[in-house]
Image: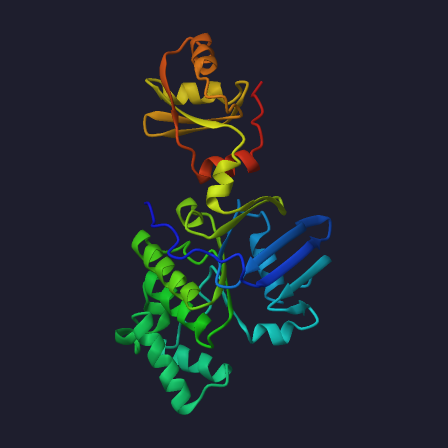
Length: 323
């Protein structure tokens, strides 16, 4: 599913709301985050992309002040952490992958409870919750128990709860992992409305189409930052080219090409293969010759790269040949 591109352009003149230098977190002998340098600007949608276990959630927890760093420094909204963690927590919103509100309370009761937590009561609480009912289409669900909501409805409620106190910075840890494509699309529209209003957002995701929507993007691998920039910058820096291969024996050809010289990655897309190479010279003859050497036939043509190609190139581990 293709999503529209970012609705606004991040302004490089905006101040930085997150600055991390050498940020590191160790759990015993395991280094979950390894000397990470990171900067996020005001009103920017900054994406965190990486395989499971690469350190995205651990980084977000450190940026929230929920977890202390083993090494390095981090400043959020101009405040150093962990010294000013409590002050920062009042100015940020945090939405986890797992639904974290009370399932045995109604939508209204959940929002009323969160309003009280943030010091909103009486008329102020009613005005703010009323805004959220309208903004996130929760009005008809007020009396529904949160545990009985659909995935998309829970997501809207969780986002409403995260922004109830109008945070300056919103941190979201894979917030769309359990919802349908239309709900994901609507959710991202809501995120860009928040960015348009001046909220800064850091969003971790494993969906490539979501990553393409971000103003800037970081790719993490084994706790390290391996790529950082706008989606266009990352595509321009791809160390090679992408080739589409049409073959009558795609699975067999895929297995054989994994170990070919110049091949960084091979993926089957329908009846075709998408081959990422380290060559940028536009020459396809070498691949045709390699396929012929394998005793196969195929049509070969260059194709436009995408962020998945970038992801494969910067996080790849070359497969080991089976004896």
